Image 1: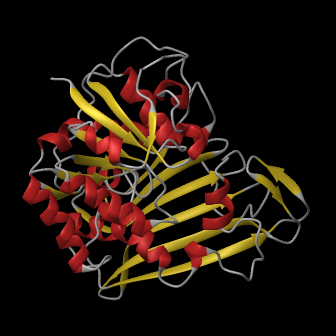
Image 2 (image 1 turned 180 degrees about the vertical axis):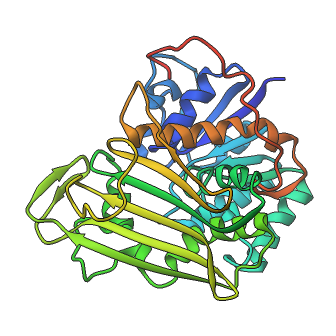
Length: 363
């Protein structure tokens, strides 16, 4: 059965989920919501960057999306800097009787002990009352911090520690809001950006850590974090703009879930804007960037995930992976029990329906 879908957001992730929704025969795109005035009225195919006229014109906000009565909305609007607005958007969609699958708000991947209980219950109740579900996922936090380590740990006889890593050069990432405003690149090294403010790392990645703790059957007693920043040795250019000498050009941070005083689950990010910065920090398994899952146990594992794409570099490939995980989860979410769903609730998301000849225009 073809699923009637709508999309909200056409940024770095949304543009790629939109491409798949248009080109994947499992789905029928019926509406598109945007927030940027200059995108209003443009065809979805144009905004997806493909040579296809869909007849679906972008409209401002959620009204047209809800009026189209889709089975499911793919919600990929910015959530990092507008968590409250993103949460209200998703709640409104659920209350309209529409399933939601998306990349934001990220804490809703597993919000227990991260977000207020009253908010979690309101979202879960909206899903139950209207017989719809909500599922948020991505790469990291996302399948690299839940699906993959859980699958590996399921083969172990014992586990002492799990470490999930993203090691990446973000110089080619063109999302200026994320680069400058969220991550704080280009700012003074002694001026913490938004996501390094006290408690924010635990808010952003605590969902992944607590989900892994739940999967392991342990209670995370405390989440601690640590970060280091490295200044630029001179001015240089990146895709998002200019990085001035002396401002932040590389960041390393860890968020660790503690159990009985011992580190059990860690998420580590090493993010550089130049490959020569801090060579003593972890290095990626391929040029540009990779993900890594390390399990200390019996057996132990070190598994490197190296996304590549015919249409862009490692950063583009990782975003494609996030988009694919979101869109391919739609049938499972539509069929799921009502309420707030997580990777622990869903069955294995199957890649049925995606085998086809490559198309250099639409992939």
